[in-house]
Length: 291
Ligand code: C2E
Ligand code: MG
Ligand code: MG
Ligand code: MG
Image (cartoon, rainbow, N blue to C red; front, top):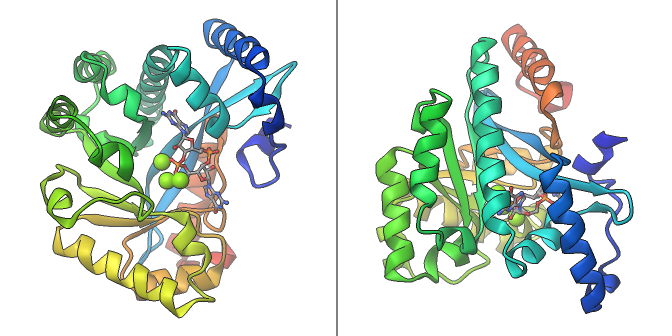
């Protein structure tokens, strides 16, 4: 049943409840308790390179299931955590858990990369970079193994201090990725000065890719812009073979979405990886459908 919460068939939390202030207080209390008793989990969604289908890395996605509230999606509980001052503690847990997992996989001979998501609030934590450095050191990880995904709006609409944080993350050797690109409003001038290595095209563009010539043109333009700025391009939300083919034709470097794999619990990752890698070596990687 835990698997469900990673896939498209997730049971959404009834957003109607969130209008009620009391309900929000109860929910944040429950979230706090879940965090304290270690009841939050990370699921991992693979990313693959578009040309050879090789495993590029994994995105860590936070999951919360509660007896009373059920499966609450991050789109509901992350804003709640921000409002009630819990995001720092949750962010610390995510960083620690992702680093520990990466180190455990490395010890098993499974070498990969993990991307964690950071919200705008987290960028305002003065000791964020120090915590990152400490977590990486504690687990003996090369900083290049860690990526921070930050939405376009959080990356662009920030103060000089937060920009300094971005620079220090990059200087540490941790990669920055601009998440949900195309939904914010960054100027080209700003984009040029962001120390990011990667840009993720928002799912909304991918959805329309095969039905709208305009969506295709926009994606093509984003890929070209990103490459001109020497950014690697990831497409998120790839749900079909047709979308995958178009994205590959347009020169998108990395693909992520249900068509490649849904987010999965950590213990399923090694099997998924070896199955995929074996299939790829046997030469069936021309069609992602066969995997
Ligand atoms: P995101 O970083 O843009 O993550 C991608 C979201 O799209 C994830 O939703 C993922 O499960 C979903 N997804 C992946 N492939 C497909 C697909 O093919 N089709 C569709 N329809 N959806 C797909 P999720 O896990 O519900 O996370 C939502 C957002 O919550 C994330 O968006 C991210 O902004 C935030 N989030 C998740 N985990 C964390 C975390 O640990 N910390 C912070 N600060 N934010 C997080
Ligand atoms: Mg993300
Ligand atoms: Mg995204
Ligand atoms: Mg998104």
